[in-house]
Length: 155
Image 1 (cartoon, rainbow, N blue to C red):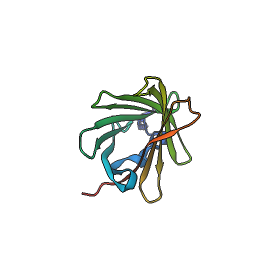
Image 2 (image 1 turned 30 degrees about the vertical axis):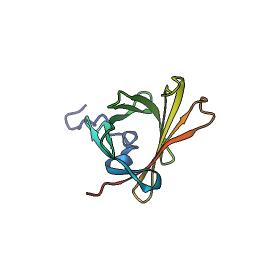
Image 3 (image 1 turned 90 degrees about the horizontal axis):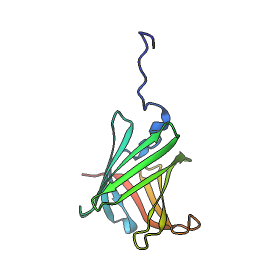
Image 4 (image 1 turned 90 degrees about the vertical axis):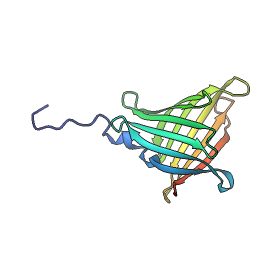
């Protein structure tokens, strides 16, 4: 690198910013427009990581996710942990205005492998839809486990 060249930030490429539409302070609404939780989505670690801090409306469930574009494998990864001891690891891509991440974990009732698919969609009104689906038949059919709408938090 020459004396007049400025080093490029490691996560400055556009691919690292595909999920930026999720950044913000959010109230999250579920069925019947009921407030189900709050989420704070920020950048951290040199702007390489998107950090989520989720709390349900009663404050009894709390979790965090760490989201990063893996420049070597060219996929997005999410690592989720929560106060029940739950974990979830997902990976996927941003395409057609949506972030789609998929992973597998044991079904909480049966222990059998269960696919998880979460799709985040940036809406033209500034909201973000999070649609979480599960499959117990290797992706042949999907059932909605959560369908939420993120709206900018109002104080």
